[in-house]
Image (tube, rainbow, N blue to C red; front, top):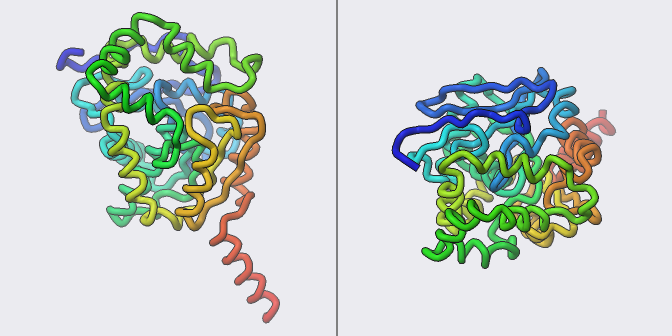
Length: 318
């Protein structure tokens, strides 16, 4: 990847019918994002080796209630490619704040998955450090990366090595079966893998610089997990839902309880016979759970239960 920036063309497979395909220049970075709906803002953040394509089956239903923004992070999907982007959660959180500022989004709900879930936590932590935690209303974190995730850590440690760089940057790009094998493990029921899934995700990795960026992410992975751990005390008051598949092969479902113990205003939903990507395997059920939490506070969090109890006591005394 040269020093020059590169903005890839968007192929048809990456577009979503009925959804606006947008670009924006923000602080010298060319972003590509999808937008649909009107009303309060909902920002949705993709995971590792993915882009806004991940949300193609859920966007339109979410847009019945929200103004939804599904972005391609810098160096991902069909946003700008450049060596200037380090690929850390700290840098990506900074970019996200710039994205919100540019679009005039003063307050939003956020839905993040996998590394995008970890990034959502890092974003909330950054806003808390700046005295702006109020900008995030509610969070849905679908199998977010975290310090207790267990699975994939040995693979990440290998990828950070010089030999791992050869594997990630050169072999994975040259031999598509490596990426295909990775994606197959993210699903429980292979019959529910969408027909366009592998080709779509592969299209997001085709632009030059994609695999170099994956290696940069691997290099910062352990420090990124430490960052997530360090900001948890700053963000624990935000209502958050941890949503997991019980057979997630990428981020261990047991880590949901570890996060829940450290996030006092959180709830957990575990989906049975489900892998890492419920928004692809069962999009309707995924949306039902997400919207129940965002719109109706179901399941309720401990602090919300407290508030409801106080309100009920006040009413009984009135």
